[in-house]
Image 1 (spheres, rainbow, N blue to C red):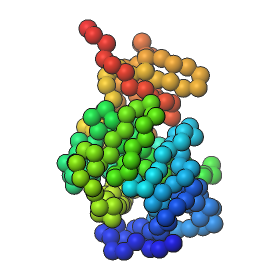
Image 2 (image 1 turned 120 degrees about the vertical axis):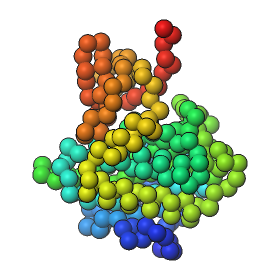
Image 3 (image 1 turned 180 degrees about the vertical axis):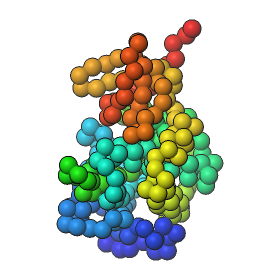
Image 4 (image 1 turned 30 degrees about the horizontal axis):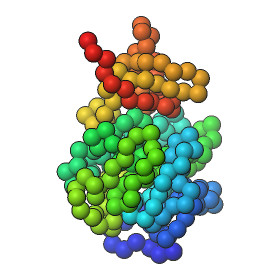
Length: 254
């Protein structure tokens, strides 16, 4: 284990880097339950058992950015869903500004470039009825790594988009600085700024297919709620979706 050197985000983040871990989320969960402070970050050069939503395997070979951050936000539990949106918007905007890659956000937790998946965010938390005890955001971004081939959505990486290798320390500097800035802004100003940015960066089409464990239906996207839920219209009914699987589909010809 070693500590990463000088980074602009050092004021909030306390970073440790490992060559190999089964899962940065799993490792950080143990630290969180033992009282690790907010801002603890675990980075793995390679994960052997990385996971995405619904327990799906997340390929994490060397060359990518695989990391988890520990937060202890003083917010009601019902606002926890805002954190993934804040982080996705923050990363998309930071990567656009630094490398001019047109990164978009797919609700609730994925980053896309031209219909190809660049990365994702997995939120895990522990809470009591009154507060969030800890919240871990596991983040995986394809940077220089070999891309997985057997995926439901084609993948891309920063190096593929730019045609050159990206310095990983620079990536973490840019990403963690942006995450610290926007997390603190969220705690100070609330969620509205991220909701407005999400509207600009969202890659969802007007018409989507929604899949959950219990149902599958088509819906029209109306926007994002103040709690980070997706507002959709199904026929004459308006619903707010929390964590269902959202699948992109082609627009129907008029």
